[in-house]
Amino acid sequence: MEWIDNIIAGLLETYETNDPYELCDYLRIKIIKLEPNNILLRDKDAFYCRDLENNEVIFIKDNLNKILEKFILLHELGHALCNPDLLSAAFTFCNKGKTEKQANYFALKLSGVMFDETELQGMTLKQISAYTGIPYRALMQLFLK
Image (cartoon, rainbow, N blue to C red; front, side):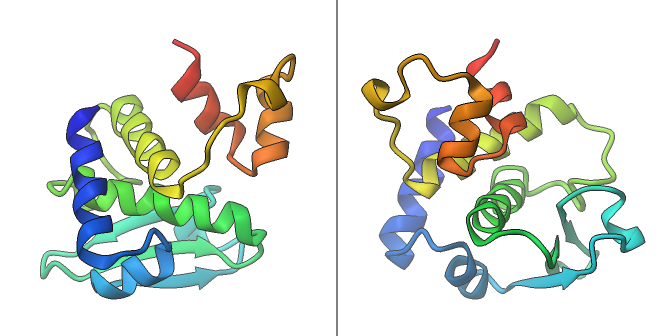
């Protein structure tokens, strides 16, 4: 996914940060926190949406821990930047598995999380998820073919 690496390199060069709050601010993507049972979330942690006038919003649960919240914001930012033709990552008929994998890859790479193979030796993906704060589903998509 070299093209995603290029997007990330451009972001880091231009904005000199990998912080999702700062990046959303620079890119004029609003972050709106919602109660977990809000119908807009449709049982998801978050979703990205762009309207017909190109206003962009990430709706996210207001009860996530900070590590998970940052990863999820990076994931949704990945939808915004890697699939700019999508109006919404939640309500689309495109190849959902492919766009989710791209957004997870984007979030993982931009987060700067480094995996120390020695430290993680013998751990399951669930244990690695708990250790790093990266959602289990994201790790599954990225590391299990």
